[in-house]
View 1 (cartoon, one colour):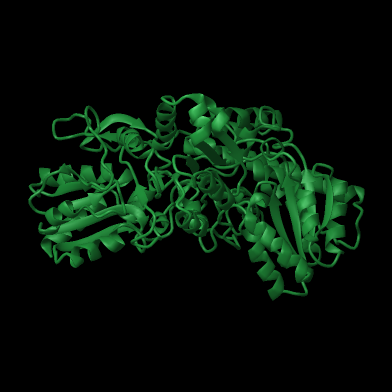
View 2 (view 1 turned 60 degrees about the vertical axis):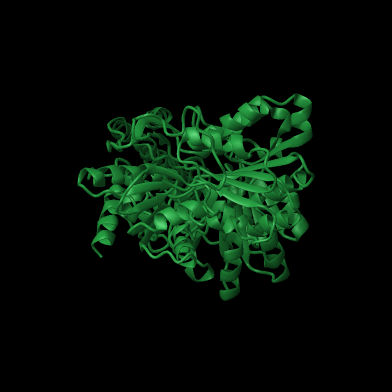
Length: 634
């Protein structure tokens, strides 16, 4: 591997003591040099993720470098005073943790150039035990402050820092953490990057009237606001926070990506810097070797050919928005306003809701990173007969909404929810962002209000599914992946879900017939299972394939058909403990059906990267074929 082209040995390991609240010239110069060095490094190695096509957030870690290098110097100056961990509740700021691991000698600097690559152990969110030097798993946005409270209770004589953001502070559990920290006088110091940028926009625009400083002050915290780019003021406020008993919030105002031409102040800075912008930045900073390295990176491609699938690929998460726009286009504006309300949770561009926002802004509400409250608002709108609340976010966050889903069901609400980024495909953010426990949404009783879970297999089925269920009453959960999926073909090589195809809720579909058993699958696992089935048939093994797009409804006719076959294998990317396969065997047994049975699914932590997640879990075509053959031999 090539050496890291920026000399991290230039990092100056100064010490600071909070009892001295004013920087001397030498300290100030060293901090500024460290800030620039770290920012250059972050731009470079996060851009390697952009060059390889795996993405990787640049803006957050770039922004918070001044705070981090000050904390690092404070830890070095009085180690016994602190719990020396850079706790961060903005999990996508993984680059901070990896850079500090390299600076501290836990991680070779050249490894940083494998940022977010498959099997590099540098996923999009840091994971404890996976990456050398990483001391905590940050998980999802806004989840660390409550955890740090517990650490503070366990370490009452020490100061703990928690890096936050104006985005993470929108999560409701931070309000709960604030109240506990104040009530227990916990020595937690929040260091909040308030750059007025989240994924989909500017909080000052979509949540006007909300102030992080006033909110935290209202909870009882001492709040110290200032310019995050003024190193003297920043240092002084951090020292005051340390020297003040109890919880203190140090709020640092700055534009997103200060000093990066083409990104400063832009929402695009939230995600990874583009290669072009990174090269221009690095060349302007005299980092030619780093710029040249970026120019030479080739984007890896998945060259696999999947039998039984077409050559047209599309992202179902975006097709969801197109399909809803088409349906709403047949309504008058007055009817849309009366019957529909779409509530976003800062992910409209990722969930396809931006298509609805652009077409029909009169029914669209841009809201913050507060999934529980937004789902309930959609449910409240949809409480009346004939009204539909539409909600969208990532599938990983479905777990956060279980109680709200129960309340919506008890109130007979009509909600069409789109949970994108289901499963594991193309998920460089890795384990904490896997959408694995989607079946949790079906948590009602047998006689409860209608709840159906849908996972269309391709873009054509997504459109057909929404046309069929859009106006249905009850709770409807539609799942899609981050990755694109190909169209499924029938045995004549035509689009299976094209032509006169109609989606029927609750009905399973025979994609391929088979005399030796059936594979049951859905979503993005279906085209991989189809490839496996086609290859098995070429080897003389006549296994069929069933698509189960309605995940939680038993198709009695199909159960009898496949249950009387020699073998049934369920293939999915959900959690092996909680997914379709965990209940499908019981359904068979309850009906006296006893084929040889197995189910394969996600069962271990991720490997980073994109399509590499499927073979890592053994649910790629090769893995599917192996298990199917083993079942038939048993």
